[in-house]
Amino acid sequence: MNDATALATAILAAGTITSPANTRVRQASRLRDSASRRETGLTLVDGQRELTRCLTAGQDVVEVFVTDAVLADLDQPHHAPLVNLLANLNASGIPLVPLAERPFSRIAFGSRNEGVVGVVRFRAADLTTFRPHAKRPVFILESLEKPGNIGAILRSADAAGFGGVILCGSGTDPANPAVIRASLGTVFSLPLASDATAAVIGWCQKHQRLVTAATPTGSCPWHKADLSQATILLGSEAHGISSAWATAAAAGQLQLQAVSLPMLGIADSLNVSATAAVLAYESLRQRQLLQ
Image (tube, rainbow, N blue to C red; front, side, top):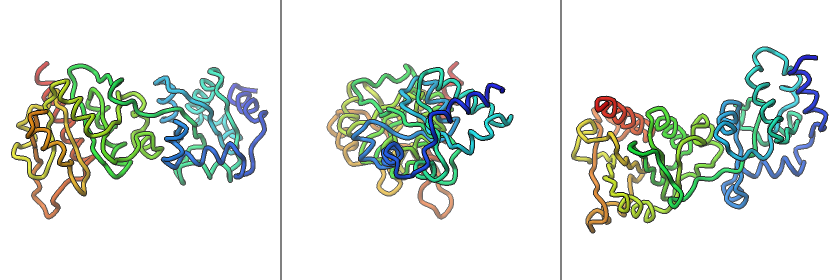
């Protein structure tokens, strides 16, 4: 018996859950709902790569569900990364729970599941404990509607070496499983905070941050602004940034400048994650020129 087969046998020994009405399955499935995540402080992590990055980042993995179909052929070569993940989870004493197809489909992320879903204790910190990497740019995301956009921006921030990301306003919960999935697990390694817009404005004032807002009417072209250590503010595609920022700037509470990207076609704005990617890599380009 090889190591993969022995691991699968050990996991299956706990007994496969076959009913979608099982209490653990029902509790896990509720974590797709934001109210349940707020109440419990738990969320779901779909996918091998995302769960691996979660574990590597030292997040608190409560339990992991594994489909019995995957366990049945765990010794196949293409499952080697999953074998390593499950072995590490098992060595850490994290419960590994085998599920039949029907209960697993109740908690998995649609048809994109990879046979493994983790229950993880995770939520963004508030600004009192936010510690971004020094001398690096930071994104502020206000009231973004779509979790996929937030996840994509987190990926861009990670790739371009940003110091952290702050979410504010009435946007998507950063612990939303769809954000985690879209971020490819980078949400776990980036310094991350979530707080009210007023608190974020206060943080920018306290730390003397020049806030660079991306708006369609910005007077400064994006590439002419100093983005090397910028605090870049992005708002919702539907409504832009809230008036609280201009009000605070008019009152002398913070410095605010607006930049824009050219729109030469019939569309009047870019997707917010595309805008973030452009600004993130312009920031990286500027930082590299300073080295």
